[in-house]
Figure 1 (spheres, one colour):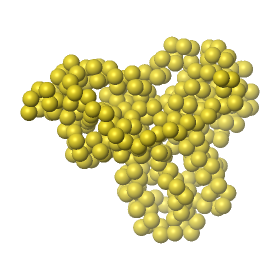
Figure 2 (cartoon, rainbow, N blue to C red; figure 1 turned 180 degrees about the vertical axis):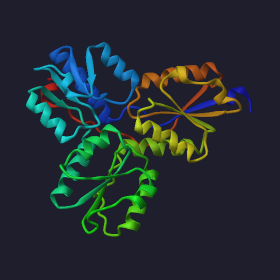
Figure 3 (cartoon, helix red, strand yellow; figure 1 turned 45 degrees about the horizontal axis):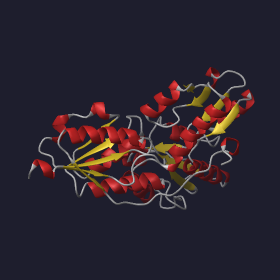
Figure 4 (tube, rainbow, N blue to C red; figure 1 turned 45 degrees about the vertical axis):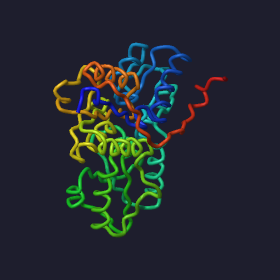
Length: 314
């Protein structure tokens, strides 16, 4: 195979999803409307480039509401927050904007509804992830968290008659399916959500990577280390025995990854901006991968509206 045959195949869809777009827009509009500083509880989305860019504009990211001064503007990140955090923020009298992804909010409502109906709820997710903490903090009751099939075997449940499960939205379909199957085997009466909790953008990006694995001999995922959906994209490729690497930006690329490789698959997590993909693309072209091909994939035309106070009149 000649040098000229080396090519890059771009995944579609890739990069920003509607929930991330909305969250970043909420912060940008709040800056325009109310001026810096704007306080955001937790990183608005899990991407270093995006967070650093907003910090430079006067956004202050905090974990504890005690760090927020009186009369400040506070924004909840795309991952959502617990009811306890919401109550504290309201009591402190902040001007509040909720940038929680609407698909995460859907899971929050599901948890509240199931709790009201007397169900004990098991959440499939990663311990310590802000979305999991926010979702499990929607009700003043114990919920069980399972991360693996093994966890399902070990959990102790107080009521096996009325049992339900929900999932973190950014997990991989394959990962949750194994755990859901294990839950159903152990608890045949367990109730699942009406529609899969895995968000459309997570699923579409995973499907796009699966398709790349049939055409490429190495896959690069642009995304930050703390981005759950970016980590899952790398895992989706690795599970299909294709070498896969996640890079925060172009500086993380290593030329040795591409020795004896001819087709590179390139994608980006839902919180990674396209500018980072473009920079990776340029570096790979410099390394001899001159042909670029856009893969086909699911079309995404979902847009989530901004809070009324932040919408422009145009």
